[in-house]
Image 1 (cartoon, rainbow, N blue to C red):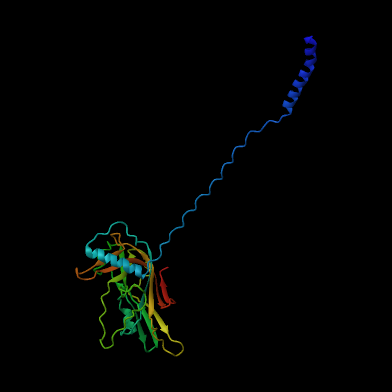
Image 2 (cartoon, rainbow, N blue to C red; image 1 turned 30 degrees about the vertical axis):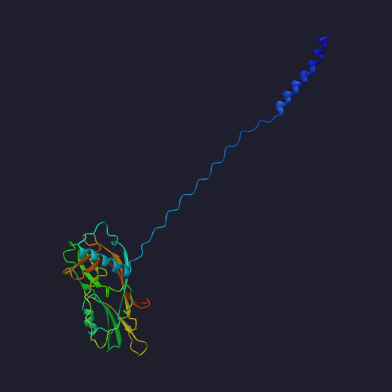
Length: 282
């Protein structure tokens, strides 16, 4: 009795197996999971902007000269590389803050004392501005320190080194006290010219000179705040590698200190910075 029942079940089992096989064929395969996207590479860091060292001004120069004078007086030896060597400078100094040079204009030009001066030409009704560098080639401050490298050294003084500003002094002389004797010059720039090098810019005893004329027939007047002399260039080194050299006759005298430079520009300016006359080496 059981055999007929089993015979009736076989067709249904075969049909079920066929359906399962068809279902397996119709089922889509699941794709593998996508790999995560790699993060974009970060852009390279920007190079830092170069730090530009500003040109040394009058205040900075006087500070450097004062430090060199102090070290020289104390007998302290300089160590390390001199950061001043190669640095640019732009130095302004006031002149013409008081009466004119009592000497004639021609005599003022002929004297190479390294100071800016002014004089009045009564015949031509003009004012002459002059700056004649001093010949420091054989001075005690420079002689023996050049090691034969320099053919000539022309000197420029920085007047009133106790004033860091480039304006005229506020102290007015007492007319009843008579003329006061100026203090000796103790701060300067030594423009050097290498042996066999270019002589461009070398003055050879010739003064920088500019003539101020009046308007119309009126003679020019000295401005109340004077004029300015501008000196620009870069510092170079003495043979010992230092930009500044100091000397003093004794321990109770203020050392005289000068910086070795290559002078690129000298100019006469008004007090508010307008250029009257200029001389460039290039």
